[in-house]
Length: 407
Image (cartoon, rainbow, N blue to C red):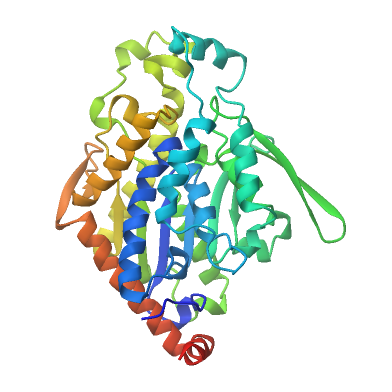
C-alpha cells in the first residue's frame, strides 16, 4: 500500500483526537526517539514506507529535548514531508550529543564542573545553536506539518510561554523561527544559556522573548497538548465540531518519558538538610534542584491523567511509557559519552519489552498494570492511528480527493 501523502484531516471527520507528547531530559531524549522509531515502523507496515509520525497526530507536544524531537518530526523538507524519519533520531543524538555536551578530560572533572557552574552555564550552547539553525533553517512555527505545542518559560515576565501552532493563528507574535523555539525550550538552568530573541508581526510591532527551558513549567507536556486541543473545542473551531469540551473518551494519547532515577533514591533529607545554594546545584554529580522540579512537574501530569482516564473508563486510550529504574550515569542529562548514549538506546529497546505500567499514586513508582507489553500496546495504537487516518480521508472531501488522485 502507498504511504499516506495527504495531510491529516481534522478530527471532525473521525472518531478520535490523537495526541503525542515527549518529555524533556537532555541526552535521554534518545529513549523516546528509540520508541518512536518502533511506532513509525509499525505504521509503515500498515500504510507503506513513506508513513511518518506527523501523518497521524493532531497535536505533538515536546519540552526541552522533546521539543527538539517534535521539531525534527514536524518541520517540512523541500518536498513538504517531515525533515526526519523517526529512525533518524537515534543517530542524530549519537552523532551530536558528544559535541553539544563536551565531556571534560581532566583529573577532577566533577570539581571542575562545580567551579565552572559558579561562573556560568556548564555548556556554551554554540554547537547546539548552530546545529539547530542549520537543520531548521527559516522554518517558522506556522509551517509545521501538524499542530505542535512547545513550552518555554519567560524569565522576564515570569510566565510560561507556549509556542502552539493553534495559537499562532490568533497571536502572530508567536510565529517564531522553530530554531529559536528549540534553543529556548532546551535552555536548562545551569546547563545551557538562556535565549533572547524577538519576532516582528503586523503593523511593525515587535515582541521580545527572554526564555529558558520549558521543563521548569511542564517537563511532561501532555496536559499542555490536551489544553491546547480543549481551547480549540471551546472556541468552536470547526475542525473539532461536534466534539464536546470534556469528551476525554475521544482522546488517544501517547506520552513518552525520558527515564528517571527514582529507584536509585539518590538524595535524602539528612544530606539535603545541610545543603546551601551550592549543594542544591551540585550534589551527587547532578543538579538536585533541577531534578526535583522537572520530575515533580512530570509526575503531577501523569497522576492527573491516570486518574482522569481511569475515571472515564478510557485507560486503554492513554499510554505512558516511562522507565524509573535508571541509575548512575544513565540518569544524567549530559554525560554524553559514546558508551552512555549507546546504553540509553538499549534502555529504550528494553522498555519496549516491559509491561505497560501505571504510576502508583501512593509510592510514585511505576507498576505493571496490563497484560500487554509497551511494544504490543504501540502495535495496537498504530492500528488505531492508521484506521483513524483512513476514516478521516474517506469522510473528508479533501482526503477523498487525495485518495482519488493517488489511485
